[in-house]
Amino acid sequence: MTPEDWHLVGFTLGMAALSTAVLIPPGLGLAWLLARRNWPGKTWVETVVALPLILPPVATGLILLKLFSRRGWLGAFLWETFGLSVVFTWRGVIVALALMSLPLFVRSARVAFAGVSRRHEQIAASLGATPTRVFWTVSVPLARRGLLAGVLLAFARALGEFGATVVLAGNIPDRTQTLSLAIYQSVQMGDDDHAFRLLIVSLMLAFVLAGASEWLSRRPDSRP
Amino acid sequence: MALPPSGFQTMSLHLQALLARLPEFSLELDVELDRPITGLFGPSGAGKTTLLETIAGLRSPDAGGIVFDQQILADTAAGLALPPHLRRIGYVPQDVALFPHLPVRQNLLYGWRARGGRGRPSHWDETIEMMELSDLVDRPLTGLSGGERQRVALGRAILSSARLWLLDEPLASLDHPVRRRLLGRLRNWVDRLGVTAIYVSHDPGEIVDWCDDVLVIERGGLVARGIPGFTASLPQFNSKLHSGFQDRR
Image (cartoon, each protein chain N blue to C red):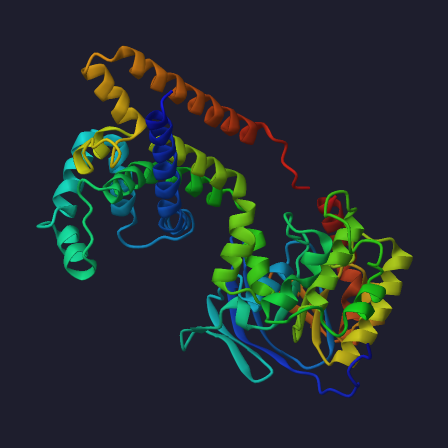
């Protein structure tokens, strides 16, 4: 492994972690709303959130490219208001990874929130807790295992993302290139040794994440 | 810490043509409760828990209003329903519903802190002593017996700065002597804090000894009111209560 390879691994882990952190706040809110409330347009939102799971990742990347290019609706706003560019930058990597991981986190968190006893939420409210306080002091702690599993899933998905990232952020070494993009590039260029070195790193990361996920699901519940 | 001085005027709870529809019958009450402790008596499934949950705001009445201490908690005609967290109620449900992720101390302080309290309430030490919780305060929730859990739930409600206590068989899992001892202290506490309490029990002796007033309900309707009426109505309830206890076991 060369220093460039280690840099690539660090960049990929950093981007996956940052994108997971970015998606958690909206993902938590969305999952709770889907699990606990009925509201107009709920089915529509559910469908939209699930789209990245169903659409080819390249197609999702193309939609993001249209949205975030400087002539796109969001891209123009970000450029004119904050001077920020998303396409072909590390920000594009974050956006692509977060959007592709969001459905997995929301699904996991939604199931976790649905499993929280309404009784405890009600009693907390009757004891004077505002809905926000009930959420943070009862719902989230009681759903913690499912939420943590969702975070792991989202992180794992982000580590392996390819299609949406390559369209929105490109495959620019030292700027937007992640592990999966580098493996693809090495294979394309016939540098099989390099590709296999990166493959082994990817396998090790996958083992660690799968192990963590397994540990989480088997850990005895400490709740009385 | 000293208890607040006694002599508070009891706050009245007015259930105005209250209607809550249940699958098999409707709870219908129109009463004003103006005594410190009102017992709520009736066979299992009579609507007692439904009434407490409606007062607490955990379920909406289908019609009618609830006014406590001149504050409207619910009024279906006006479309008003005060959210549960603003009702200043301390509810001890039958299933206690302690927060499983919090140790005993955090459970006890939950309502106090939710209502903006910092540190510990001034009556912390006395509540711990009164509910005999000293040995439990620093324990996790795991391993507590049913009776210990009930005492923690009661302590949690008492410490929450509530003005109205809704106690749904709060001491049912305790031995009779312990229950009577704690009830005596609870009675003293209600009088000195000036709170209002509704106390559900299946024990007529407890109602007569510790309550100032009683509502006897059956299939959602009021069938007797006041201690004399209650004692007079007891014979007709004996068989129903007995079957109710069998169901609960």
